[in-house]
Image: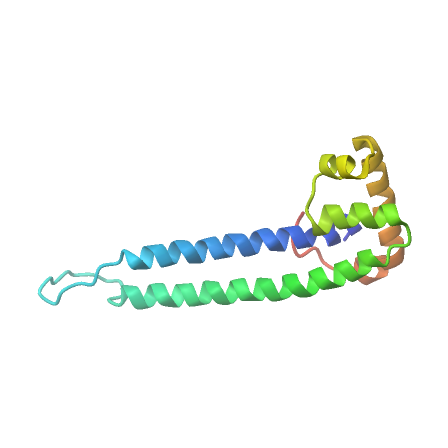
Length: 148
């Protein structure tokens, strides 16, 4: 795993959490539209007769998955912030924090720091190299959980 992949996991997890919560919202909306069959309305079906119960079970499972993502995200984000905070060069710290914690584009970072886009790309590359030199032993052998 590279430093870029390692740091990029925060953004990926954040998107996965948003997607999972969106799925939960959609399931809740669908659950509100499920009608209950009246006993006089005999319909032959091979599916479950408890559609609302099935939908609630799916929602609970999805909410549990979302919570697991949140737990992983919180711990990883906290660890990465501590690692970035300890970067010795101020410009490296600022670029890595803005890119991977605040999820800013290189254009935005360049404007905020008063550098050209090309200079920010160069600083970013140097910062990643320095980050990997300092912390690479902690993550380089990890399997890539999320392709970034």
